[in-house]
Image 1 (cartoon, rainbow, N blue to C red):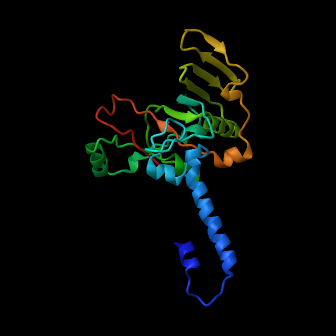
Image 2 (cartoon, helix red, strand yellow):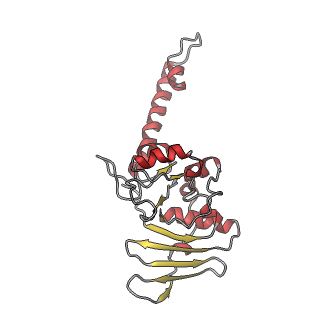
Image 3 (tube, one colour):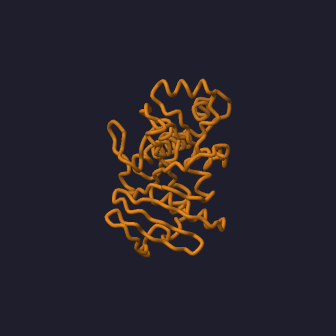
Length: 237
């Protein structure tokens, strides 16, 4: 609206028409590029995907367009972690701020009544889950987001344990930060093996541009036993 007012202003100030045309073209081009980022797979945590409920790093749910065209992500399911650097961001459950009336309306419509707010934590650094003493809720993440969280946990010198499952193989990785130990429980055997040197806990931190622009939502996995009539898991913001 501010751009529209600027370009259509009736003020007496005379602007150079050529400069305004180039500025208008630049703003429009940046807007189009911004909306294409999730289609290209270059960003997930942004307003267009939030309001459209668009999936980026998992199979696309867009009616026409695919997603994740340029950026392939390996997907992991975080089964347990006791690091605040992780748990303050993902999944950041926030439905305790709902009134009982609102929650009941959501559930009548087939909604689980759950609300998650990782975007709120990343954008304005507000954690909303602190009053929810609950069991750990598993969630899906792309590999880049897991690497970011590992770096953030280490930056706070936190001793933590992490268990995640590599998809679709089903191999489960157990990592302990205190002694930097890592082992894998194969989905086809009952024995643990030492993680290879290229496993995610040993991967280098993200580059500056990756860290600033490749931001991702988590996708929480709600147990069916708790929400037997839900057809939607919840809202992400």
